[in-house]
Image (cartoon, rainbow, N blue to C red):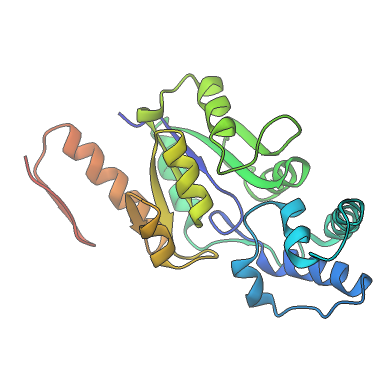
Amino acid sequence: MLKAVIFDLDGTLLDTLEDIAISCNFVLEYYNKSSLPIEDYNLIVGQGASQLFIDLLPDLSKDKHAEALGIFEKHYAKQFDKNTKIYDDISKVLTFFQVRGIKMAVLSNKPNSFTKKCVMKYFRDWKFDAVYGIRDGIPRKPSEAGVVEILKELQVEPNEAIFIGDTKVDIITAKNADMDSIGVLWGFREKKELVEHGAKFIAEKPTDIIKYVSAEASYTTGQNLRVDGGITRSV
């Protein structure tokens, strides 16, 4: 029985790419580097802000990478919500889980303070039982450490939860935690990446998550079912 769902944040619940790109480009320009098109960041983000500047500014020292991160965070704090928005129909997904008593959590590679700030701003109409970004002492995704911590906090076993995300990092995280995963296609990556890394189900749009979970629930209770979108169960 499904008791909990853990969401990635950027590219899964929120379209944050433009605001992240704006602040990253501010940092690049600070170091006299050329800014990048917003769409290029689709393939750059996902590993956390600290890794982001190692990738973007590989010629800088470790101290300069830390400096770049600080510049980014200061700039991003002022404009993180200028263009960010909830993806269409995500509200339906969150309501679907909430009314069924399924616990919800967020695990992001975004800095912890920004992760919590985004959830508080955009998702105050729903209850999240745990919300975490990158913190000292907890390895970032794809380490399973954050998932293990959340499951313990929620008192849920891995086989009673699913992880939903838009990149291979999320799918690998779920695999490392012995959880099933749903890969989503409205975020930062393409279907090929998610399939190759073992997503159990691919959702082309948020309401596909509702169909999939409903189909799985009916399957476990022994009902015959056919759901539009190709999810078929017969027992």
